[in-house]
Length: 360
Image (cartoon, rainbow, N blue to C red; front, side, top):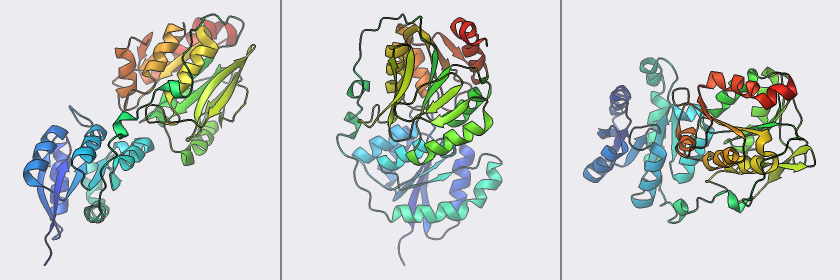
């Protein structure tokens, strides 16, 4: 008889740990070697218990699951199954975890966890067994060093913050939880609102569909951005999921520019690229909004917008799914306002420049 698979459960919720333990131990081929409440606890348990496979949450105290996964795969590679509610909100987090070496993922149910998670038993057990049988390769040694900044796409320039004769534009950046946050803001914007450019960390296969879904529920016209497309009032342009979106200016007109350059902050599209281009092309006529997301992409770009005289807004912690990106911007003193999600549209529309030019 073969040895049972030894699993370590890593989750900050005592309820989830208890339920996963009972669920996995019900299978005779699996032995729960232990549980851990955070990555630091997990690190010690891995050394002590030497499990065959790990279940790992994303959002945990002291260190997030993605950072822990990156360290684990670099120093002690082993099979990992992501079990997280964030996988429902952010496809980017799924891809990032898989890129780092996670074998697969299971999304926690959104409601009635005690009942619903039990219904996931078969999926979790089957995926855990497959993960345990997978040969995991160590993460590339230089992966964590490859965090390139916006310079690789658009060089930083001295900005003259005065474009009084040009229309205003809104630039929005988001990641984890951002698809719903963007939807809420756009649904509150009238058809006469300023042209809006958006970079959301999202796989290429989903960006066009995301734009189409928004177009059906918003007064503004929403589309996936095309290279050379003019940015017009009442229109929203979503970055394709595999290219950077930049704002360029020719006289008094703004245009979308798509760039297939390297990843910036390990993302393509990257928010920093969009924000820097908006700062350089629009200056005081731009408004920048950084929404929920893990990491710090967009923080430096929002600072550049702020320094160029643009109005800058960060989503507040309580309304963010993950306060990494907006929180990083706050730490850089890049924001004029830190607002709950439901107040951001009003702040954009009440900005004096917007109100004067668009009658909002």
